[in-house]
Length: 65
Image (cartoon, rainbow, N blue to C red; front, side, top):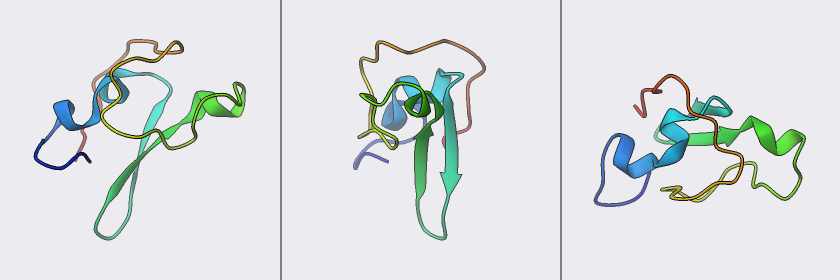
């Protein structure tokens, strides 16, 4: 997550996107963009917080953990 931020603000659009999946590691949480499988121009693990994304699809709010 972005330094100095917490929760949804640190993740940005990914926290509310149907294509995003939180991948938890021992000391970090990474956000996987599943849409990147079909759209190679999208980063698999985007730099956070994501403020703009052409493939953003609103859905359930994910727990940024």
